[in-house]
Length: 170
Image (cartoon, rainbow, N blue to C red):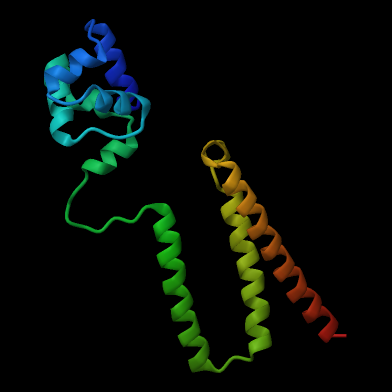
């Protein structure tokens, strides 16, 4: 359960308004509202204070809220979210592959054909493994517009490359 919903349930169970809770935590009512609506997350100190105030364990308070639990993880390691891993991993792998291709002097037409096939397989793999219900919830109209533009350019580039390769082979 998300901390915002848990907080709201505990507050109502203890007959407290957002203002009452804010006063007990020495913060603004707007902060409580943002936490309950998922607009922001409480600090660790506030989570401990809420746990003490409502006499519930930290585990019970934050279990199920992956975002909040991730926020509290700190073992000194750099953590990348999935999008950052895709971006930085893709750039790094691309650079390594360019270096290897330069070392082995592969013909560029063969390399381009393989890149096209592997990129298409990768795109299909990503699309088939997305949690679409979450993607659909997060897309704005502007994001959909730009997504259509990106998809159109990607498809056009791929089809054009395949057509050029096919006609060159005739």
